[in-house]
Image (cartoon, rainbow, N blue to C red):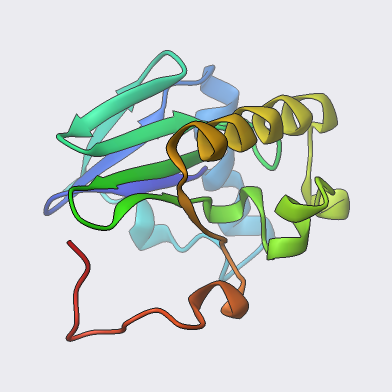
Length: 152
């Protein structure tokens, strides 16, 4: 399960059939450390969304981008002075996955979905001129200002 945490104790998730929603519960047993039991406590407010995208606040859009997992979402952030940024989470672990349109091997669980999501993300980047931030790519952070500096 992939999710975006927004506001204290509020987590946005893609609404999926029940077996996909409970898969992380199974992973806590089979892959200790990947999904920890305290990730799924009842003090959190789970906010499921349907459709291909949702605006969770002005300038913050979640886009459903299945392929790596059925519920994967990317975050589009529209800022008034520095433009659009897209945080791809696990859709692209490194920049080469995006630049060469190459999925991340067996981690792309549904190849056809990954290809469709890849096309959607490339079109989003072309349409908005977005700066891309990849899920596990240190190179994507080079040249960025870090805290306490901020982008507007």
